[in-house]
Length: 239
Image (cartoon, rainbow, N blue to C red; front, side, top):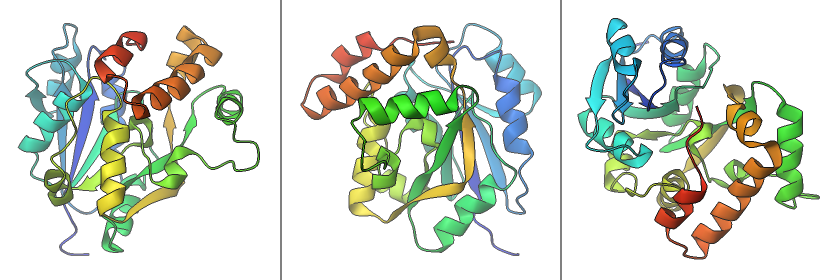
């Protein structure tokens, strides 16, 4: 097939030397006949993340400061692809992930995200999510309503991304805010199959109930107008 859209895969990372080569392998195994650009959006790692990425010939974009929103915006400015695909270092993808994105884009959608499962303790984590979000009758997740987080692996047409002004450069909830604006202005789509696999490392290290409660209350407080700079102090990095 000719004239397939070019995809820019943007890996958002900070001190991910243990995971960076896995995510590069996951992205480069894709069965896609179009052109793909790979960018590491690094937030100033002081480990071997950047050096390992260079070994695999990735473009390296160093942001002016640590923070996913700043890192993603900086990488998006350098991207040459038609479609931006934002991923984290701890994700795993089926081989048809890129083709699934392009199938959605060619149907007229401007972007969206993926259904996901956790690499361990998935049933426990999902059940906790339903319980703590009070989803007893309506089991729909936020992503079923057009709200995508980083662990949904957000994809978006580059033109739509820039029209929206990219991510607000706040330390937390930038993905929630962006996907809300995206879904309000454009058609978005949740890809249910294939599902992506995300790491449960935060749940394991920080605690299952604590992590899920943080997600619930940070979203609620953000919607109430609590400063994301204050909320970020309650949500530390986990490696």
